[in-house]
Image (cartoon, rainbow, N blue to C red; front, side, top):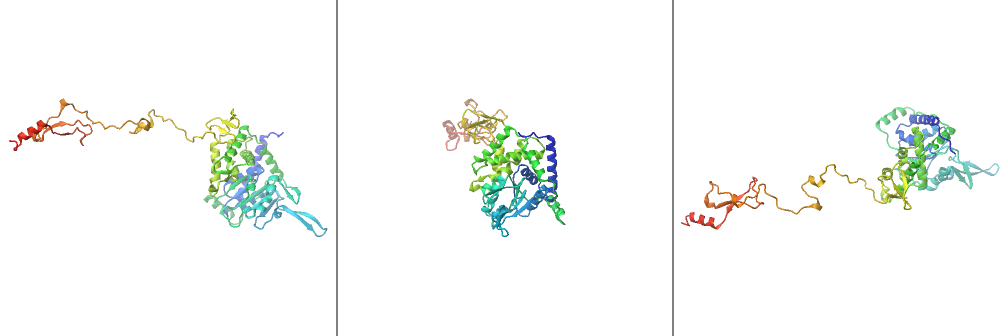
Length: 443
């Protein structure tokens, strides 16, 4: 049975980790999130893959971090002609007594610095598979345990493609976190120039192998609620059913995410894990494990966008209830029913229809009617009601009578420019006889 965690132990562990952070910060001047992620991997008994362009102090950071731990450190410079035996070791013949003795490779150390790991071919990179997962190596049929703690810090250059080999998916999955390093800002770069202008500072050992093992045991005893177990499983299941993902996060990734969340809670000084701890480490833990479709492989943000989408759509810490149908999980809230794999049965609506605050429907603000209630077109009405026969306009006195009688137009479509009902001469038989009698030709 696991011993309960004492709050004094947690405070002491937090102080030791803060001292490690300050000691590494003396040499590496940059984003502190990078150091925190390396501490998370250390507490979770995982490995770190640092990725960034040349000249941003990846190797400097790794050497300073390894020296601070106070453990045995060995460095491996990966090259195209490197052999697996150069990493694990091999048996060599002793000419004095004619027997074979083991010459241990650099993997037999507490901290292994794998510099430019993607410059070695796949067969050489596979020499670390057994060591990173099972913390042992097999040399000519003999099994050898690696020292505890065992920590691999690897670096790679993502832009240099000539003479490099991509890491196998099985090896990428063995790295707990992938840390993306970028250029420092102007203030950090000025501080770096002042610090390293004359002589680079040397870090001092802060921890010991026994102290490192103790910190790892403290992180392992962090409490996790049952709802967070479901949350981690649903996050990884979401990546397996995403349409842009060919190969999602494995069960090893779910276990790594849980251990990283417990390590993040240890850094924060809390004896329990919160959903925010899972969110903070979800990107560095899950993104590099995803295999995307070929058309999305060139996008540097595609993997992280899948993880961000999972964090947005998967409920955090909500209770889960089993439905009557086998293999179906009904989640309380607005997430909708989901299958066991995490894919929703009904497509989720990202932005549901909102009822307007005004009681009038939205189409009333415009002169057009909605298509379902559109009225038949009718001629516009005149501004003044049409006059009847008893109220016809008489001829104006200034206008000659020869122009004929005048009447008010009853056609509602005839509107004068000034907005009044227009008048026009009325051609009737009586008017024509009167006009003919008054004309000289009629006389």
